[in-house]
Length: 241
Image (cartoon, one colour):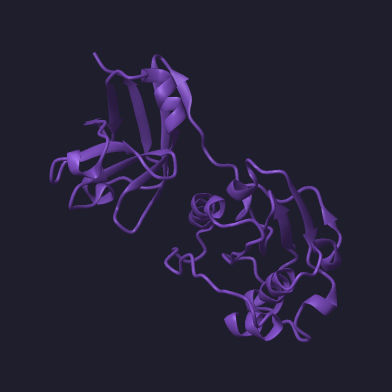
């Protein structure tokens, strides 16, 4: 893919976001884009390929969102990156902006990488294909109030075993303000801290992480292992006494 990009746009500056996503994990890819895209400069082209549907009729998307571009499969991967943005999308179908031969198993190389490279080279988005107004969206869990508790769930575990939840920090602040909070995960009560260093070794604690979401961590360990928690595990928070 990098070779294709540099062959089309030799001046491109390539930055790897991650190659550590679990195979076929579209949600993990969407979360990675959500956390990274806002911190790249306008005009950046983000190429994302988590594509278990490669070779099927799923569309290839190129999107302009708040002055940045995203290219990837239309399978929900771009959901969170589009969530807060004004965007326009096209289906990448124009043959002149693909490789001459497109395989059934490597659209990252043959379709997505060329589209990203042509965008980086200044080709207008609209020339890549016809407009798309209904990109596939992931149906991701949010959070809700239930009997005085703000209830969400684990969305993902990172490579440190930190648990990223569906509870935004702003919802937590609205619930507890500057007071204390009580968290429950896997039947255990956790305390909220302001830094990883405030956590006790081996004891799970909660923190609002860099993504703006409530996270659960273990200093020097893995919250995922300590709590036997994974995607879908319920998380509850309420005001402290």
